[in-house]
Length: 107
Length: 121
Image 1 (tube, each protein chain N blue to C red):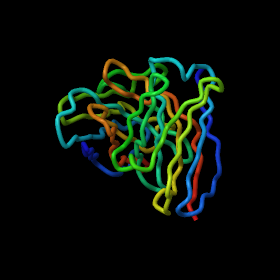
Image 2: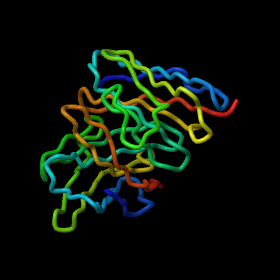
Image 3: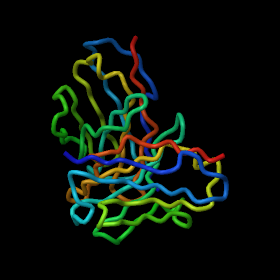
Image 4: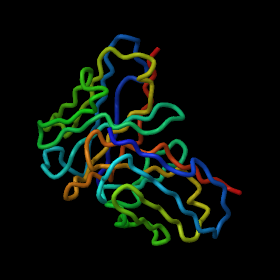
């Protein structure tokens, strides 16, 4: 299986902050990398697909970059509704695997 | 707007079979464009891909569960189902049914059910 790691595992931030989350794959996955946001008690929501493609309806303050093994999710100006957990997911090869998540909470 | 809704028992005894159904509205499980998927999340843990069905019959399962998992589809009811045999406490999780968009080789999960908690006890 392709192992996905994320850093940091958690971070504290304030509204308006720029937030960056990194995701690393244990092997080459091209750009087959998706990002999700999950709030407590809710299903995940896809934010970014194919490393950098913003999903319909997702605010432009979210962006993704990277290819190969290293990827980044950036929130340019954190909003109150962005406090949540974020997961990356590779779909280069089944079984599709997720990172362990990054929890963004209030500083 | 595509909607998915899981249904099934919330409590299963050890060694028995977990059975869940996902009812899809706003889209067809017969569509060859999508992969109808199950994902689970143990309490306080990360997400685990269980497997998918596509093209109304082909399947792909996580090798860690392959010997115990079956995903099937009922096109007449626009539903797909999950069966997991010989369950243990380690199978306690929130189970999500999900649509995988299958975009040019990438597999983003774009529609999710609300999730259903299944406890094994």
